[in-house]
Length: 110
Image (cartoon, rainbow, N blue to C red):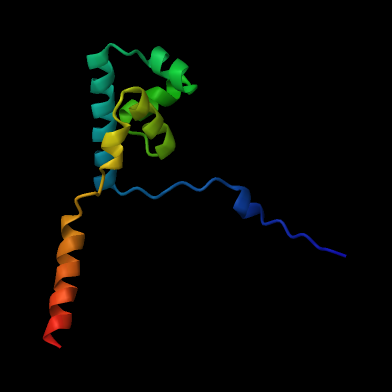
């Protein structure tokens, strides 16, 4: 006999904790997306039809809503021809390289 235990809490949606500083970053991303749409003459209706998302979700993306999936942000960027910009995020990790260099230098001194 097999007993299955269902954790009721695991069925609840968890949302990411986004600190105020990072909310500003998402708001800026949303504003950038909104401007890119306007420059191209793309309406929320057009974007929603091309991606299959609701206009409400597109509106949330343009506001930088933290509850919208990052995949949806990328889908909108794809319609705008800007998905490659997203791929460059963190590609120039200056802090990471400095930390790595510090470790390499300290290993040489031993």
